[in-house]
Length: 242
Image (cartoon, rainbow, N blue to C red; front, top):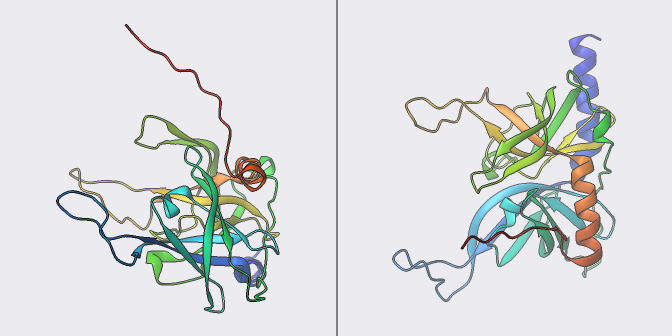
């Protein structure tokens, strides 16, 4: 396949998927810098990430870290329309969350995305990432290839983030929660993190870093639970020493 033909396919995937890809803004109250306590007054924009609409009822899937701590949320659609959204539920350990768009004024969703089977993903497969880099450039399209499957990352909180696809499609801060698509336009992952090389202990925004996306099969099971019950049930074993 020629580069031109590949570009045509990427553009077709983007044209099909983009109407369902959204920008999510997390609102939080201002906090006292000395005490950390929330101050009175209207919540302010705290962070911006990406997401994607999965059904005509207006449910949006994104990362937990995109909505974490938020007291209110807005979602900007592909055409620039902004809607309020409420949190349905989340799973912190796989970094998945579901929002519900407010469609009470009769607004219809501009598009939906479907989940593909991430078990069929192979290293070398072409993929397309869509999201909002730096919280400003909505519906930016990039492409690359799958580098590896079944990766895990140290989340820094005492557990590893599992079920990851490693890929080379450029992603940036703000792409979190956006879809990783196969060439049929199906969601086979959700962009969640990027590994970059640090020099002298300083963090960098190395644009050649390695991208990671949560496998769609792991996402779908959690999303189904969240929609049905509002939460995810996880067994655990507590151990005490004496």
